[in-house]
Image 1 (cartoon, rainbow, N blue to C red):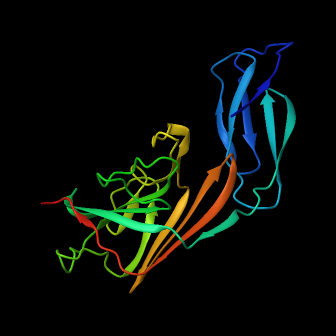
Image 2 (image 1 turned 60 degrees about the vertical axis):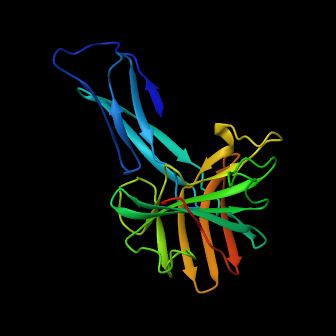
Length: 224
C-alpha cells in the first residue's frame, strides 16, 4: 500500500478528489481521510522494472505521481536429491482421499512425528480422487498434481493450509517464521520417482526448490 498527501487551497462546492491509474497493477484507491489518498500496488511478476502513473483530479485541477517499480528477479534454483520420503494416509477427508507427504533430510522421530532437532521438511497435503491400489503398501497414484494456493478444494491438488517448508530448531520445534508457505508448486509422481517443485520466499528472496526422491516408499496408514 502507498499513499499520496494533498492539500485543498481553494475548495470548490460539490467537487471531489479522484485518482486513476494508467496501468492495471495500481488501484484500490481510498479517500477515507481528508488530504490523503491510499492505493495498492500489485507485486511485479516479471524481471523487468515497470512504470505507472497516477493522476489525481479535483474540479479543473490535476497533478500526476509516477510509480517506478523494480523487477522481480528470477527465482534462485535449488535442487535436492538426497531427502527421504515419508508419508501418512488419512483416508477420506473432505470427500477425497488424503495423502500427506513428508520430504526431509533427517526423517521422522520414533513416534513417526516431525519433531527431529535441526531437521528440514517439505510437507504436501494432497487430496486425490483415487484410493491407494494396495492398502498394505500405500503409495501415491502416478500423475501430476498442482498446488492450490487458495484452498479452493479442487480434486487432485495439494492445499496451502498444511503444505509448507519447515526448519526445526535444536529442540525439534519450528516457529511460525520457519514454516514458510509455498507461492506455487507441482507434484510429479512417476514409477519409482516423486518430484516436488515449489517456489517460496526465503528472507524475501524468491527461490525455486526441486526435491527429487527415487526409490521405494510406503505411507503409514492413519485411516485404520
